[in-house]
Length: 282
Image (cartoon, rainbow, N blue to C red):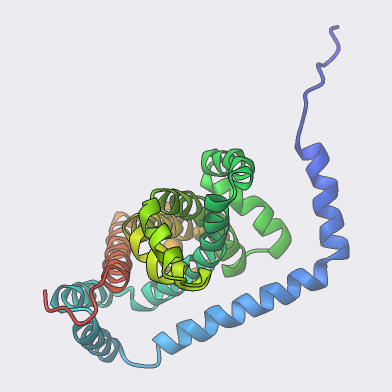
């Protein structure tokens, strides 16, 4: 008999490391899990304080006052659809998950992207890492998150943050690399400090590309949150999973259309808010 060939298994090296982390760092992971869960529960409870019609009116009115007619109409239609199909609470949970994940992804990716645009060596180090992160199938991110944080919303948001960082980081670096040198030289000639040059010159000039990065981050985060329904994250992802396991086409279709409504809501509001839409009446 031929001997059984020996195959290289990355898990043989990673499993002891994960076990060691679970054994020696469990209190830290438990603390992180409790903090994240408290934030998610608090944000979701805040969205559910008002009845659905009250929140729809309040959100649409705020969008009309600050962003304009079109974002207000999108807000009313998207939230109204989620209420109409009977998935209001699930939609609020999904909006909370995506909003928190995107905020944390941007908070990590934006400064790293700015640093990478200023330091080519850092950009060279990050490039292959980002290539790998964007090539790995999204559900693979759930495996270590579930091992370290168990089932529920916490591993879902951890995996979503990790999955949402690469597009935002790449496009932030690209956006700052494309800024005309004349603008930077003008700011330096006027004696503006680096912070003023960054927020008054560079960020406005890079905003179109940054908005593309934010859009990609939102859509990928929403896709991951939906996929995370497999690990008990709740929200619309859980409804999609329930429709799949029970072979209920109606439930799956309702949840899928509600996800589209949430995606349009977050995308249009973020573009209007960051794209200079303040107090426009378009």
